[in-house]
Image (cartoon, rainbow, N blue to C red; front, side, top):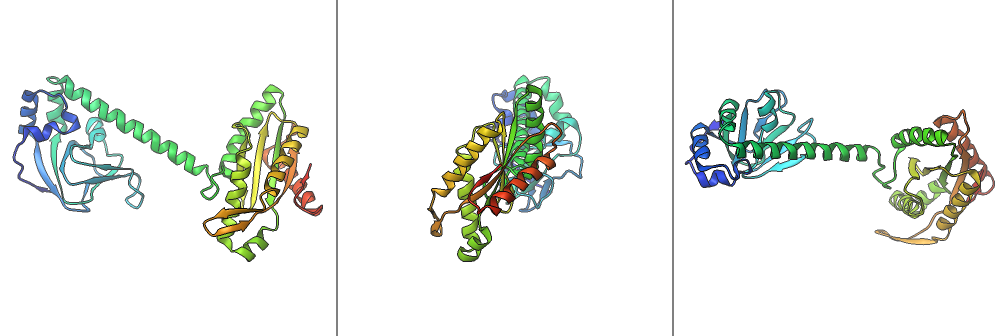
Length: 312
């Protein structure tokens, strides 16, 4: 980053969100405190490894914000008028992210001591900064939520994954036990899936798994959880449902797949698949592993009896 010449321009500053509705007198004082700097494309403005005592306003160019590592995807893009460094500027600590110029950029830099003095004279400036900080917090919360959701989802089918199963089992088994309600598990395996892959290709197999997920998930209640357990196996948790009703649900799901003799895919028309299903009901001393083991044993019986059927 190197010093740059900047023709002081009050109107240009007014376009920055930080300075909306700030009086001309306060802005004029800021102009005297600002220093202009140029950054080359790829230059790092802020890093978690370096303490920051400045607030930056982007006047020209573009910057991207990275969390954790520069190898990650950027979480946001800064454009002309946006600020950078406001969080570390306020708490006088290390930045929480990398900010990198993606093209030649011009920034104005203001030391924290200069802006703190102006807060006393311009409540509008303080209000604008608080709004920017709130936006950063909300954005961070969205990133955390998106990360958690991504960590719990199977990217192919959109079903929950085994990580989520452990969490939801603890929640639902505790709730059902407390309320004296039953809980059942269906374990489903796509029939002859290896042969399907061998004949039609692995991409076709992926589309078939998506078909299974879409067909079954649309018939479940919001409180039910469908999990891709691994490969062509799925697990469905049915809270507050006893074994007789779970058997009816499992049979309905099985028939819904059986009735899809073929389906459209980006590869063209592909044959449908059937599934074998094992059923187990939660017992008082069950943990997740023992419940899965009994559902898996029932699934094995369904396969032994000819597949495309439910046992349990």
